Length: 462
Length: 100
Image 1 (spheres, each protein chain N blue to C red):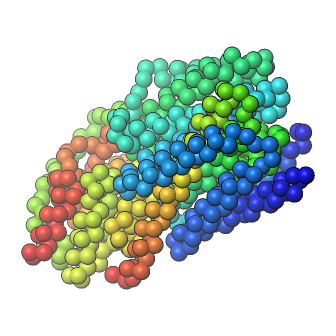
Image 2: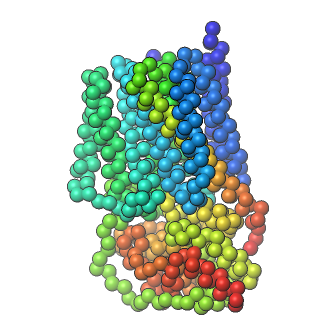
């Protein structure tokens, strides 16, 4: 009998789940994080391998081929991609998970539509999985720059989107009701379309929230598939999927809310308001934009006691993190204290700036969260803002501004603020930045990498 | 067999709290690896894909099951490699740290 085989496989799933939780736990501290992913990786490998021994499985050549194609493709792609392209990679692989969940649900529906309870769960998994893959792909295209990253607003958006969702879900319900497969195709088409429509009006700077949410959604879709599977002939893999999927759903939701809170906006505001599509009008700025030369900035920084660097997406685009590291080292060699102020939503994914600065070998002990560093700005001689805009915009303190209430880096309180910026354009939110017009603020125009490069050479000569 | 679904529901309930507790105190520094790591963990979907394809009996099920396996495998390996690369950078920066 194969009873002991099933038991052995179940035991392995239990161990795998345990190690997933320990691995996730280890990822909450920088010291143990790397160990955490290795543990989780081993657990995953074992869980996948033992699944092949499940009694009654067939189609092994196809399975092996699929694992080889997907596995090697994912491996290669994730290896060769540049560190700056990480946000879109995370979006892409997350979408793959959502797509897999939707496809599994489709197979379940084809195989056992007669069972209402299971099929209901499969339909739910298919809905969430489809939205997750379609939305993640749009996020990928936007982040990769293959599609304009600004908010794309279609006419009658709310009505059309809601309609697509309602009709799509209705097709799913009809499928369950009639036990007929003919409605499955329009069901999937409409839900994929909804995922696309949902993500189109979301602009680039809101991507941290979007990526975190789709990550959570994929987790939930996987858990729903697991629920449907526990009823099947080989149900126990379903429990592993329920636990792993729910873990991700819970942790991903938490991260989503943290990101939205960092912008003082609700998750639904991020998704449904088409933020940044319209520009603020009727606000006139006092003062003027004051350009400054790199040599003057270098001199200013050289004689400062403390310099705080506030990076944003512009640094990522220009791939300036290496130069920034060089600049920080030069300043420290001259006895200037250098710190980095990291806004939680700077960049395009949660923690984006931390990753880039770590890539450039900047010690994470020099990176400070908004809450930790805001009190230091009044005592700081020079703040260097590199390619950040909305996260340092004091308009967040001005009632009536679309940014009002967003917790920002209070760089305007420093004695001198230098802003490295490509041109005079507005930030993602389409709002003039009061900061740039303040008396203590000067603009160093240029690509972030070139501008920081000039500062470095000026410091070397000085 | 509805009992299995109730069992799974109890398990899911506990997993919600586990997921919340385990990551509720993660520093901003680790938000990316955490997200990428949880992205990897939902790659367990590959197991479901193997099940779906392994039990498929006709061409339509096989075709869709195959897509599920390819996508699931991509999720797993891609998610792992991305997370590993990100964490490797944090690891490298650690010994060079110290007071400025």
